[in-house]
Each structure stands twice: as structure tokens, then as C-alpha cells.
Image (tube, rainbow, N blue to C red; front, side, top):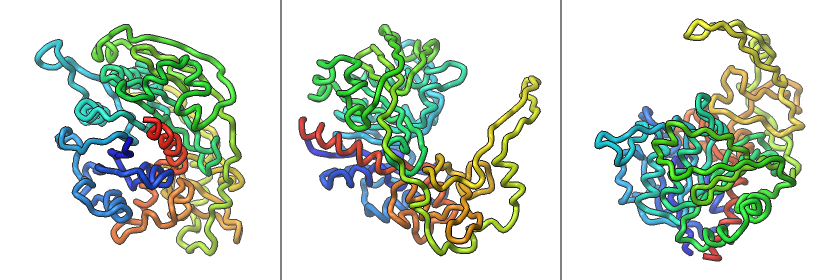
Length: 400
């Protein structure tokens, strides 16, 4: 099977870089990157710097694109926001649904309906499995029901990059779906559900597990997407498998691989602007434990509490999860003691890129603001994870 890819929400190209590192045969036939509300499209410019300017590298709102005009492809990839996927009846009555405006999952669904690629690989924050807080599991349930309705089975795994030898404790859920037209679909359907999760599935072969702690099952029972949006609740665990309308989920433990400590990625002779020359007490407060009396909008009084973070960060461990606010004065920003001189400083953009597995100065362009380089890395994938997934995909595509 030809290794053609459609890349959605492409950012600075983490999915593409990871796949192309696994094999030069991957061919991205269409890519979309759009930062809403921004005059300057820095991530898109960075993408084009590395992969070229093309009519199939599109900088436009995906909701405004006619899905049938997207080139045919055999793999759809993308990392998309965790949002409220609630639906409503269409104005015409029971025939059809209206997804919540602006929610990007519905754009993915529309592409799948129009193009029916054999394979899909998506990434999201692990919170997706538990959202929203008022109806746990509803959003992920809607996603799976949409896939099932379009003829896809799916596997998922929550993967912490550091558990498999990387330099960041970044936990994300990956979803791999395959259409009933594929040979892989038939092979999976001939395999026991627990064997898929344990040893035989896409994620089990890519990121081996040590053991399964608990399992749970549920069926959609032919409920409509609207019914699922209204009433579905389920405790999705960190791994699972959708076969038809039936869901099997499990808590799995990785076979841990030694992570790379942050100290091995640090630059030497860092510019003075990265050092903390004040506000140390503010940093200590932000990083420290807190118990604060607060009042909700409804007048309910409660205590907001948070535990302490290491200050400075321990460079003998992998980095914490990098957020889009990295380098600003806030609790989540990394602060390290520079091993060259013992002074406290921020991470540099190069170090942020290395933590995600990008080449040095990947985000350095003529127009990219310094702060936005961190923003891009806060949004980015851990590229070596995609390379590893790509190697498993190579075998699947060869078998097709």
C-alpha cells in the first residue's frame, strides 16, 4: 500500500518528521495548519521552511475547506484539541446531528466520511478519556461511536514518553483506527480482544506492556450519536479496543525503558538573558505548595490546594510536561540550576526542541518570535514516539 498521508493541525510538523524518520517512503499529500485569530501564522511558516511551499500545504480554517477536495490518502494523522463534543438534533428533526460549532473533532469526522482512509492515527491530551467532568467519558465515547458508524475499529493507549526512553514526562492518548476495508481490520477481528491490548495490537507491539491490572467492558447497543451525547458515561482506562459497538478497556503497566535525564540535553555557554536575576521569591511562591480560600461563581466556598514542585527542576530526571506558557513567569515553567556555573536559569529554545526530539533551531525562522518558539514546543508531539509508531505502521502497510 502506498504510504500517503493527510496531516491535520500540523503545527511545526512533528507527525511528518516522525513518520519520515521511520521511512523515507512516507508521502504527505496534504497538510493543514491554521492558528485562529492570528494575523501571523508562525507555525505554518516554520512547517513550510522545512517541508516546502506547496498548494497542498494549506494555511486556512479547516472548517471552510471542502473535504471532498482533499487528496486521497491512506493515513490521516493529527493532534487536535480536547473540547466538548456535545451534539444537537439537526433542525430537520431526527435525521442527522449538529456538532458543536468550532469543535475540531467534527472536521476530522467529515474528512473520514468523505475520504475513508484505511488508517487513522490521532493524538490528544489524556484528559480526553475523562471529559467532561459532568459526564465522564462522554467525549471519547462520541469519538468512538463516530468511528464505529463509519466502519472503523480502533485501539488507544495513554503513553508517557519518559516511560519509553524519552526526555519528557509527557502523557498523551494516541488513537489508531482502521477501516473495515483493510486487511489489518480482518486480522484484528480474528484476534481475542485482550490479546489485542496485551500483545498483538498496534500499541502493544510498539510500546510493550508488563501486565494488565483491571478491565472493563461496555457496548453502545446501537445507540445514536445524539443518545450517547445525552447519556453515555464510562470509565475509560489507559488502554483499550473498539470492535464494532463493543468496547474493551484495561489499565496496563509499561515495560519501562530508562529515560534520558534532562542534563544530557543542556546547552553550554548560555546567553545571559536566560538567567534569573530577580523575582526569586515569586518563583519560590509559584513552585511551592498552597492552600487558598476561594469562592465559586455560585457562592460555594472551597480551598484550592496544590502540592510543591521541585525548585529548581532536577536535571537528573526527564523534564516535566512542557506547556505553551514555557519560559514565562509561572508555575509550570522549567527552572534549572546551570551545571556550568550553579546559577538558576530558564531553558533555551534549543533545549525545548531537544526535549521534544526536534533538531536544534527547528523553530528558528526569520519571523518566529522568541516566545512563540516555546509555544510551538508546548503544542508539539514527542517526535521519537511518532518514529516508533511509524516503524510499526511500515509493517502494517507492507502487509496490505
